[in-house]
Length: 426
Image (tube, rainbow, N blue to C red; front, side, top):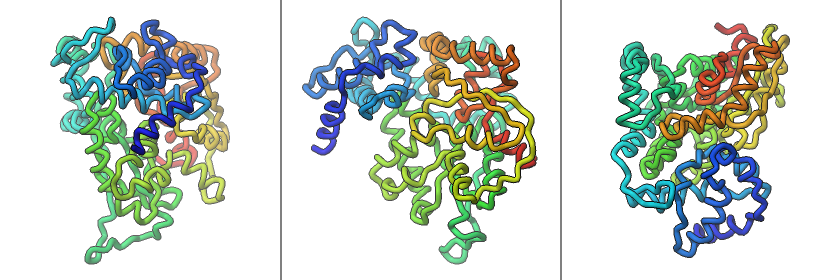
């Protein structure tokens, strides 16, 4: 009853303003997509009565959360859409195609969902011999074969693999009790996410170095994928199992009130919004104890605890705020912090979604849409470099980094690297 009442209350908050549809990046470029209000709150009223509207458009929601960021009433629109996707489509092993016709889910799409959803397994395989993996994925014949068999676009910007990030934990033990070298107030747990673990371990190491420079012992348990890729590709049950596994790993640290830090926007949003719904021990804590990296560092700055003996870093940067960072409601703490560094000039471009949205832009039928969504941003980045307004781009999201570099051909990296230079850490 509580769940159903929550659905009704959420609907009652929708005031029919259509602001969500007006700001939806998919609706802006795809006329056949009616927008989040139509497939979310409007269709949910019929779903509550047991009636399923034509749900073909559900598959074109990229889960960027722009609708929820825009909504003046705080309606959880994408929650409705994801629940509808799970309830109406995936249990039936069917999919709706445009025009309202129901057909069996193809083996191709089932396999693609399995591949893209299991980013953790794919990363583990890809990093066994990363140079060979990257060479194979760079062969046009292989990419063409992937497109024909899996429906993964042959021109999508698949990220390269490198040596994986190694986990560390508190291993010094006396009996069953961990012997800590620093007090709990100077310990943090780092949740790196799949992109950092398998595609950008150097950024993960940089995060650890910066935290250590500020006096923290960084614990990196052997976390699994956050579960977002599984959810986005229709494997909802497996996604919930993954959340429970991660919560079990976090349990002792949550009990000690240790902050959980992540430098990935999508992982951070999942930990703050999805994990509290897990119904496991510690679920009531995880949302309150999770921080975006720069959110955490900025809080240390406000308390006078951040080391701010910065070297000058003469650089001009363009900044893209990831959608899933905006959805966390913490503003842009990386901008505020980088602007404390002498010589750093940062321009917040504020040009909307990059279009990739996790695995959305990798799919053959959605690649062109993803590029159309990101075109305004790509053009702004290119023009900014041409005009000498900035030299390179920064953004917290690994997927956004890959997509911006793909669409604009401008180097894009995580803002932690600017902080590394300011601290003089190599």
